[in-house]
Amino acid sequence: MEEKLQDAGPALNGELLREAKAMGFSDREIASLTGLPLETITRMREQEGIKPVFLKIDASSAFSQSTLPYYYSTFSPREEEWEPLPGPKVMVLGAGPIRIGQGIEFDYCAVHAAWALKRESISPIMINNNPETVSTDYDTADRLYFEPLTPESVLAILERERPEGVVVQFGGQTAINLARPIAEAGYRILGTPVEAIDRAEDRERFDELLRDLGIPRPQGGTATGVAQAVEIARSLGFPVLVRPSYVLGGRAMEIVYDEEELREYASRAVKVEPEHPILIDKYLPGKEVEVDGVSDGERILISGIMEQVERAGIHSGDSIALFPARDLSAEVIEKIVDYAERMARALGIQGLFNIQFVVQGTEVYVLELNPRASRTVPYISKVTGVPLVGLGIEVLLGKKLGQLGYGVGLLPPPPFSAVKVPVFSFSKLPRVDVTLGPEMKSTGEVLGLARSLPLALYKGLVAAGLRLRPRGVLLATIADRDKGEAIPIIRGFAHMGYRIWATAGTAGALAAAGIPPQGVKKIGEGSPHIVDFIREGGSGDKYCNPG
Image (cartoon, rainbow, N blue to C red; front, top):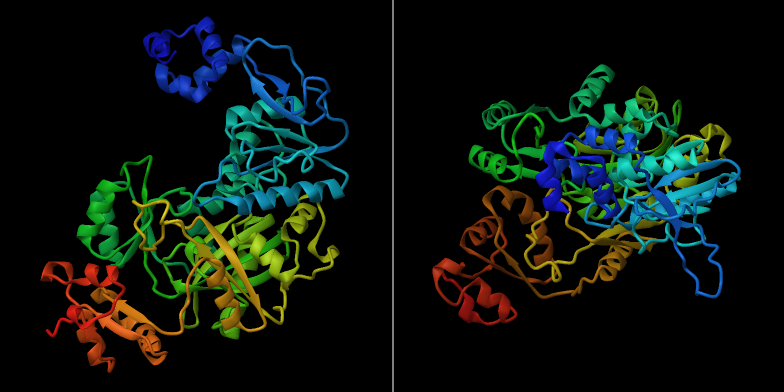
């Protein structure tokens, strides 16, 4: 069929199109194979009357009638099994396949959205194509479609169901990207308007908003070519944070420290052309914090401020998050709440939002605003007892925060500590670079709760699979640019009784700082070297490098 479509090219006819659709080819695939614009394929299909029929998934035995509200579509000639759903109904978009950058956290949000709609006597209709989720359980929504989260599939369902509205803010970036085609097709998006979503997602428009509001953000620019990227980076000064626009999970995002790295990045990681610009920001080595909240368009409720342990530039999904925040002054907290409220009001956000900041001293800079639920919503909802998704649904249905019983502004912190710790699967992903950075690599997370922060952190680390020992050996080989940041951490391990081993350059820096280590050779300095040292458990004087 692929060969037939390629051979037909622009001469594609209705009969071949019907045959391709019956085999499961999407409009986008057919457009790619024939070389025709996507709009032409969709228009031809509609003119030919080629529409999907919806069939029930039979989840019962052959001797009983299935009553489960599961549907899927097909273009094969079959008898329609779809039946109208009575009463008011709202469609909820899930997050689709679980992958790094977008996982089970958004399934939590979709499920709680469905439950909240049921409490309001509204029938939730779920679209999700991942059977390994709770949102696709038979008792979650009143109707479920196992369909891809693409404009073609979603619009076909909307044409049948004609719901009172569509909720896109609980399915991560996948769902939020569908907001515009849904709105352009004439369906109502509940919550944050599509224009506001685009203003928050589009780099240049968001920068303009922050300038108008007088809210600082890291300086940056947009490049459509290598030369322009180098020019922007030179004006900002290295290091800079570079990424393609509209990414999921920090894909292809890096911190680059010089012009050579930038040129390599532009040629290797991103296709640099006007359709795929590079976003370049000045890298600020401060403390990253983030907030999850709800806005009714006028006032906001922030359930908590989370502080990341890792340096700025590490993806928030890969960072240990502390709640309540530990090292923020009252002045900084006041700025965070003020900036959040002003941005939410200016954008007209209705429903959930997530904002990430970087703090340097008493200065607070906005990194990004997501007009949707984030992956930390389950974490912050569980530890505060504030049902963010439920409140978000009530706001989407027209209620004001003052009516919902939780107050407005920043809520007081609980009398305990909660620590989110990421879980990595490097042993199952052997070719993945284990160095953390702006591109997300974790595959899960755990929660540590305790009356004190050290105990909560300990419980989280143990739950994440780390073997914590009160003493042992620490091997240090640190890049020059990171030595100043690493030395205080290594000193802490030395005070705990750890024996410190280091390669030559790091050993010299440690000795100068009053931390005398044992020396070990690098791989290129002959055997036994650092890899031998690791393989044999880090013991014995044969690894010492007297130099």
